[in-house]
Amino acid sequence: FRSRCGNLNTGFRTRYSDTTSLFGEQRYTLGDVTTGLRHALGIDLAPTERGSYGASLEVGFLRDDSTGAETERRAAGLTMGYTRAATMGAAALEYRTDDTENAGGGTNNRVTWLFKSNIQHQLDPSWRILGKLNYSNSVSSQGEFFDGRFTEAILGYGYRPVLNDRWNSLFKYTYFYNMPTAEQVTTLNTPVEFIQKSHILSLDTIYDLTRRWSLGGKYAYRLGQVSQDRVNVEFFDSTASLYVLRADWHFINHWDALVEARLLDLPEAQDRRAGTLWALYRHIGKNLKFGAGYNFTDFSDDLTDLDYDSQGFFINLIGKI
Image (tube, rainbow, N blue to C red; front, side, top):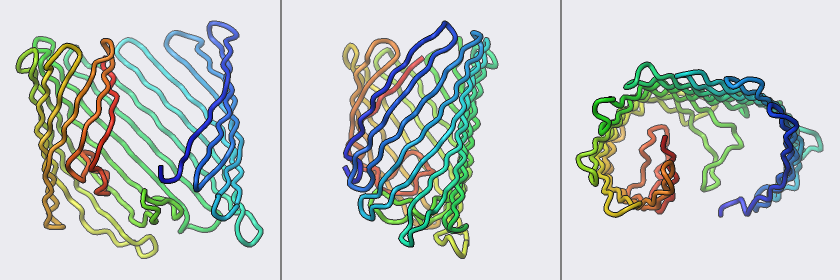
């Protein structure tokens, strides 16, 4: 609603054999800020039951509707997936260049590397280990001030006792670093000026009291630092503790109700924020449920989110294994 009026996607996919398929896509973007057209072509290979691979190319342009400046984009990507017994993993790598017209009649160049991966391994019937790494590095020809970097690394342990499948828990450690590019803006169209680096520990657990009632909770702690100046970088502490108590009620066939009580403690700011979240979910088959609700608090349960703009209605789609 703020800048993106819509997207139109067209494309095709054709399978040449049991192991090879090709795809093509065109994406037209219409917006109050940016308009563009991009073309992509790729191939997917699955030579064995355990491994799958893919490659893609993308070319196109984006136009800034306020200045008329065009950005020519070229990108190439690789993907890989692996499955064997108790181990599943996937990774993707993308290289992207953006050439943008400037007011002096020249061109500014931006080179971006993107990488994402995830892995899950079942240690035994009750314990699972999971990991995720997302990384990007963006370098601008305008100088270091316009560069950007992002790292998110997660290591977690999931616990679901075989002899008591009513209980589910997840312990997770997150390292988060974000230095947004100078052109990146918030939802209010103001520049994102701060640099964040955080270590976050969290514990989620839920227990089925009966067939209709479940009780759960979450505790998370952030040991973080923030700098509000990109030029004269000076970090200051930004710690936080999050407490969540939740109850789920399976009140009728295929329908669930959820209520959460939340408390966010910010010692450096000498601030505490509290409130509730309510939601209603509808089960769709055995593996999906769709819901909508209202968050009466202005903060997120994701402690890497430093913007207090989470209050309001939301929709959510949850997949279950």
